[in-house]
Image 1 (spheres, rainbow, N blue to C red):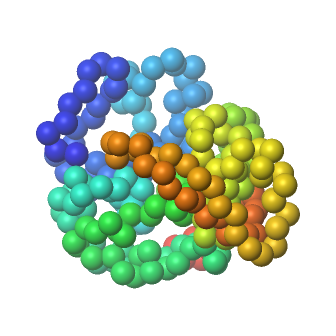
Image 2 (cartoon, rainbow, N blue to C red; image 1 turned 90 degrees about the vertical axis):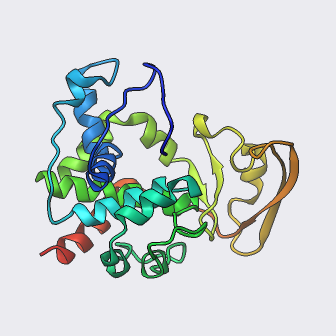
Length: 247
């Protein structure tokens, strides 16, 4: 957001063109660009390796910018950025796959005015936005679907292990995950094992939420059924849709 700064613990890039900034953000959120940096064997992301990343405009740019904004503009501090970069063509976009956890109103109801409902907030939606970014970036770079899957399977074993044991409820909330960076998200394994085969019904969890200051007790409700995702299978399905969409 405007009026923020950081020390050298973070490497920053400034853009005069906000749309280009959002586009580069999408590129750098993708597996292909992460793979590019990993393949260099560097321990830090600095100008000497970031400067080698390709940056270009393409017919996929609008879709990438839209998804990057939906992922990042999560508070009203991003309202000005959203308004300046918003494009009415976002309303014609849609998810690449059909799933009850995904609604195309995510795109059709977008407007230049940022609201709390503007960004994607459910765990499943955010994951799918990143999956779609991976596919679109690969297409823009001329990478094949098989090559994208190979990048993922070889260079991202930790992500693959997390994906193999992260479960979503029917509304898109993570109900269980082995992801170590998501400590406290979802049910403990022992509790989840008892309910993971539920077909219908709900499970409640009492949590203490201190994200907004003073600790507050909340009740989280998970809706059965629960299921895992297969990123490589999703890549294939998303690829088929976008291959037809961008003929």
